[in-house]
Length: 139
Ligand code: TYC
Image (cartoon, rainbow, N blue to C red; front, side):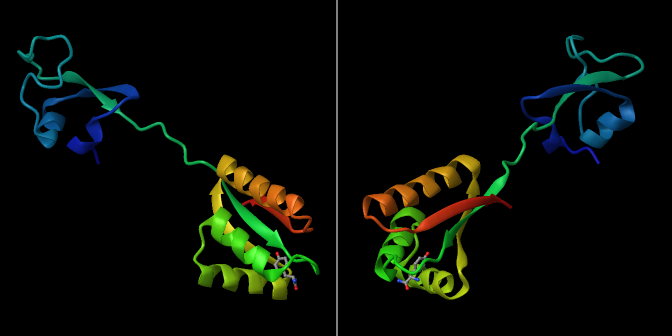
């Protein structure tokens, strides 16, 4: 069903309206007529531009932490708080999940956000000489 609120926007396509369609849209006789000075025509048909949002949702990526035997638990918790904006409580929960299960999710993000977070984790782990590994996978 075509509603008035469907008619705003940017990407344009053209549809032709007859009197019945205009009534359904609550348009006046001239409204929706392109280049006709608003006067309407005998057959009361016209043209209206309808806009369809041409947006695509970005693909999402899961960012995962991997367990190892050497990275201190406190370091992992601080990384989760700092890079993934987790509360201390959530960070502890995720760290313990990774410690026990071998892998755990830190968050789900568009590609470039996920990539930046992986890089931040890997850089801070390397600088502190911990073997902590962080990866991303398409959801
Ligand atoms: N297994 C580590 C230890 O016992 C802790 C740890 C947790 C390391 C999560 C990495 O992603 C990780 N010190």
